[in-house]
Amino acid sequence: MSQSEKIRVLVVDDSLLSREFIIRGLEADPQLEVVAKASNPFEARDKIIEFRPDVMTCDINMPKMDGIEFIRRLLPQYPIPVVVVSSVSGAIFDALNAGAVEFVAKPDEHEDPDLFIKRLIQKIKIASKAKLTINPGQPDNKLAMSREAKHIDIIAIGASTGGTEALHYLLKTLPPTIPGIVIVQHIPPVFSRLFAERLNNQTAFTVKEAQTGDVVEKGKVFIAPGQQNMRVKKQGNRYVIVCAADQKISGHMPSVDVLFESVAVAAKEKAIGVILTGMGYDGAKGLLAMRRKGARTIGQDEASSVVYGMPKAAFEIGAVEKQVGLQQIPRTLLNMLK
Image (cartoon, rainbow, N blue to C red; front, side, top):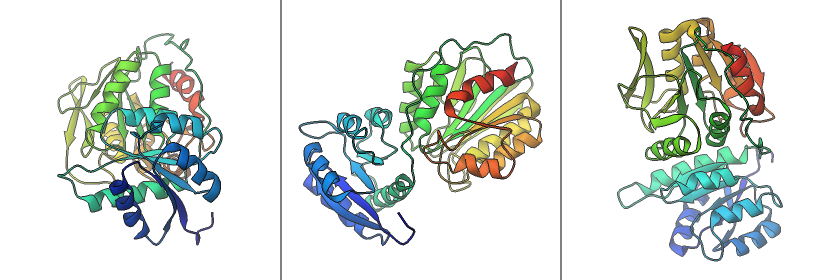
C-alpha cells in the first residue's frame, strides 16, 4: 500500500447501530475508506474475499461464531490485521492471542464517543503497518538461573502493539528466580489490571498492576496502570514504585521513557532494559539513558516484531546492546544475569 492510497477497512459488528456509528466515524478520516461491512463472521469472510481490505475491525460477541474463533480460523487462510472492538473484558486478550494486533474498548454511556472513534482510527492506522508474525511456539521451560544474579537488581521492559503476547511469551519462558520486573505496556485503564491478572494466573510469576509503594523483588512483576506513569525510586536497599497521573511523554501515559529513565537513575549498572514490539519511539531515549549508566540492554528484532517501531528507534540511536528475536530474548537475558 503506497502512501497516497487510503487504508481499506472492513467493519464487522452484529449491532446495526454500532456498525453504522463506526462506519460514519471512520469515513470522516480522509486516510480511511470503509469498503465493506458485515454482521457476522460468515458474511465477513465473503467480504474479505470480495473486497480484500487492508484492515478489519471485529466485535467479539457475535452470532453463529464469536470473534475470537473467527480470528483464529480466519488468519491462517486470509492474513489480515485485525483491530478488536468490544466491551471491556479479559476476552480481549484471547482475541490478541488468536492473532488480532490491536484493540479498542467500546464506549459506555459515560464516555465520549468521539474519543472512541479517534482511538479506533489511530489503532487502524497502526494495524495497517503491522506484520502478522509467526507464533513463537511453546516456551522453553527448561531455562533456569545457574546462580543468583547479585549484580542485577531490576529488569525493566517496555512494549506497545504486539506487546501483550510478547510479554506473555517471555514470562512463560523466564524462571521466576530472576530479579524483579517492571513493565510498561501501552494499555488503557482497567485493561492493565485485567492483563496483570491474566499473567498472574498463567505464569509462575506473581504479577499485579503496580501501585505506589510496591517493592520490586525477585519473582514479582509489576504492570504500569493505564493512564498513569510508573517510576522506580531507590530507598535504602529497596526499589520502590511510584505511580502518578502526570503527563504524556512521547505521546503516552504510561510512558516507557519515564520508566526507563527512572531505572537509569535508581539502578544504574544494576539493571537490564528490554524494548519490545510497538509503534513510535517511546522508550528509545530512556533505554539510551539506561545504557549510558551502565545497564545491559536488549531490543526485539524486526523479523519477530508485529511493529518494528520502538525497537528500531532505540537501535538507531545506539540504545540497544543486543538485538535478537523474541524467542532468543529469554536466553539472552539470562546470559546477561550470569
